[in-house]
Length: 340
Image 1 (cartoon, rainbow, N blue to C red):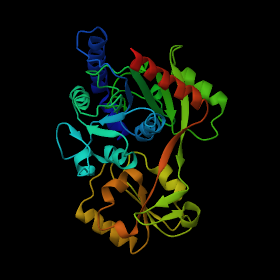
Image 2 (image 1 turned 45 degrees about the vertical axis):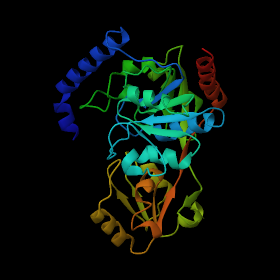
Image 3 (image 1 turned 90 degrees about the vertical axis):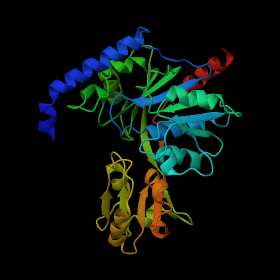
Image 4 (image 1 turned 180 degrees about the vertical axis):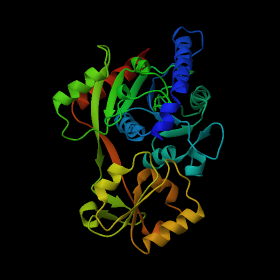
């Protein structure tokens, strides 16, 4: 695979040139970006997948939803519906996509919508009788037809955009200079003991501008696993033989947190739709043992034949320090946006 990526280097240069021209045209106003008169926060990354967008969106929901009417708008990756869909009691992972459906189930006091056309999605949300005061755009950093008022750029500690290259040689969707649009840069999935010196080295490597803020987060795993009917402390389950199941971009930390030498780890592609044959295979391998999966996978599996032995492990994104400054920056943007 590495050799193939090197062979495709000329295509990466071409792709980088095309995306740079596109960004230039948007920056100069030659290509149109639509602004809206409510606060719109875009969360995304420069690279393909695996930076922790879902926990970051959930952090913002927890921060804002007690104070404001919040809506999330996602593309709804791999959903089977089309166009604009506003989540309701009939929704599921197939109509919304797994992450939006997870938002809908965890946060019943917000609106959750999907639309690949973010401009249309926002317009539809604002036409609702109970229209939101704030819209969180999930995975929309490159969706420049909408001009968000505030941009949060994520980059994974183990795969910084400064060390990456354009697709298909690397994993970048656009050049590193795209980071200049960000108001806040968040380095995700850091070791919990990341030193201040290492944080400063990363700040310099990412060439963070004086107008930008940078924060560091780690994935905080729950100390409890959950099923439809019960919850079990993680310490009680770690020594038990079980099946660990993940269909996410980078499952290793999830496996490492739970596994022992007697466990079997089953890995599927990100956003995988589990077929009947997949379910049969998982059930046969489990042979009556507990099956523990990620929260994102659980929303697709909770109504399957595995439900009687299926558990999930919640996660959240935790700021290593200065969380009050992060919160204040977001809240100040919203305050000004609602007053204008």
